Length: 272
Image 1 (cartoon, rainbow, N blue to C red):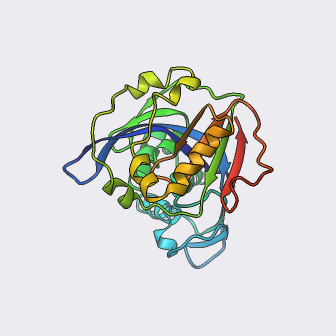
Image 2 (image 1 turned 90 degrees about the horizontal axis):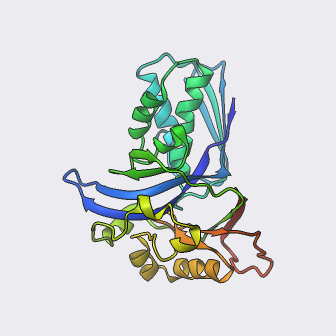
Image 3 (image 1 turned 60 degrees about the vertical axis):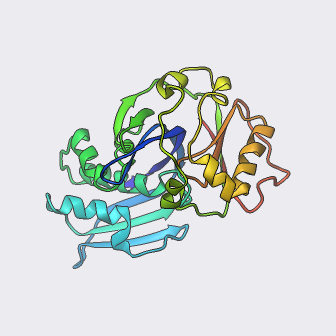
């Protein structure tokens, strides 16, 4: 079985309050984007319960800390899982705010469910996914949603970006999530995101914001510069995704990057 775990962007992100459990409540819109990893899962004739290999972009850390293997361990508690050969080709940049690790974990759950005929409902898959990370459940249904709570309470939103291009730029900068939250003072958003997202895209620039940008831009001016460069190229809307460091721009036309304006950055241009 070959799966293509896709990334997401955050359209707006408001940190509304700090919870008693130490986490934060947020409001955001998750939107799926077709920049994907490649995940291959096959039953294997092996003594060990899995073999796991990673190609493409390097991922630091032990296999047991990877969300793919954490997803496997979750299902092993409740189901008989045969030995597996698991191969990941990593294309989504890490530490970018694009959900690259979360999507791999969620697709592993979905893939095992289908491959082994486990008959787990989407609702139950979302419960498993929530144990992996706050934004993992989004990738189960994988459609645009307004997310609140810790990013785990979803309401479908009717957004169509059909015909638009999304440009994603990720500089060689790592922004830790903890560091990003440290620069935030939680507060209620001035605009209702669920209402603002229904406005024409041309109005989003003055309506929809990412609370992390202020402190992250102060520490990493290069990220702020990328956002402005996207607007200079004609983006209708540009924003940092999640806590960064990736920045995306939404365009109503194909964009020419022949002048190497984003030199030494990861760059992709996706037609919706």
